[in-house]
Image (cartoon, rainbow, N blue to C red; front, top):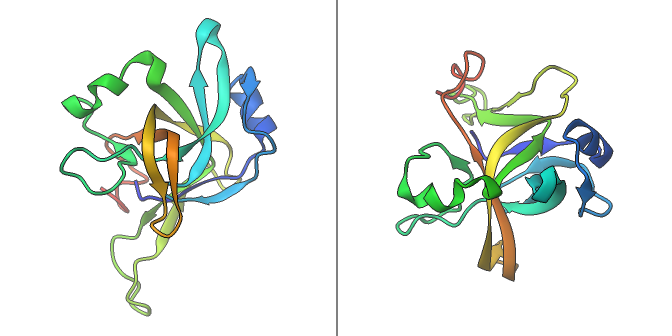
Amino acid sequence: MCNLYSMTRSQDAIRQLFKVSRDDTGNMPSFPSIFPDGEAPVIIGGADDERTLTTMRWGFPPPPKGYQPVTNIRNVSSPFWRAWMKPQYRCLVPVTSFSEYAPEPDPKTGRKDIVWFSLDSSRPLFAFAGLWRPWTGARGTKAKPVEGDHLLYSFLTTEPNAVVAPIHP
């Protein structure tokens, strides 16, 4: 998955569709473009099947030899993910669309276009499965790092379906 998605439905729509019993987001805005390390809504489970809507930053800290936050988890058999695969660290990430770069550059501009995907043209609400974790350190941009405790999430990904595969295998 490219590192850009959107979530433009209301928090009430999220609460209803995913049967959220607690909402910690306050007055949640629309999220037309969510990039790595940005904050976005996430649903986590709790005791007695309680579901909480909260906000977290997108991207786990990288493995020891990595350099960028990990936004998409594909190799779940890696020991790096073992601690976070437990049920208490599973989450749902509300989404209305996601993007991939076109496989070839636009002949006029020389740049790859962004191709958006959604369930249909009305961009209804759905969710990616994900993992979350607490983390302490600096997050945010180099110009404005935010030191402290953070909640981080990443998507679980798999082989693309027949719609996405021609754009991003």
